[in-house]
Image (cartoon, rainbow, N blue to C red; front, side, top):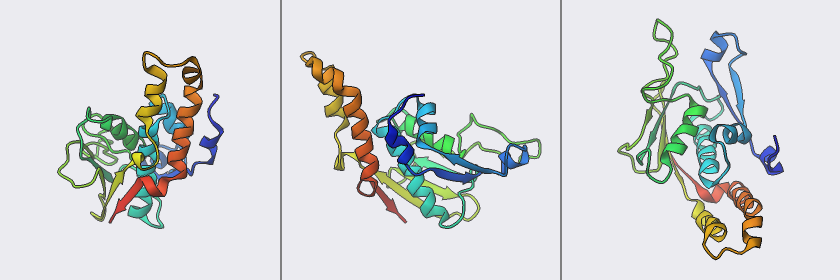
Length: 195
């Protein structure tokens, strides 16, 4: 698969999934790359990059020196599924954390490994996203503000407006992924962690 080289430079998210270990897939340790998430989403944009960074920063803060425990993280989003692509963000956070609403794995017959009722939209929270450890009830909130460093809509409009120049249309894919790269290079500016 062809993709921008900067994807390889993005820090991986590493989680522990006891269901994976229980079923004999591996020792439970799962590395998730930005490329993995791009494959799930089908594209790379500021929203997909933001969701990845929200998980990266949020899980590091929530679990400190431990591996984040996939399937034991409650994920709350302030917005509805259709508001500002929050559904996309929720889907990506679900893939990384294992959290689902009512559509995920319900667990084995004993109820262990249940991934349902851990993902919520239109949550009564102050920040964009809140992660809660199910085992300790510790929380961390995250805001994502890409407009501090990029303007995705401006780049998009340059290629789709009625009087778009051929050079703008041709250069759009490269410029758009450069914008995504800028988001990652400025992750400390676009991500706000609230403890």
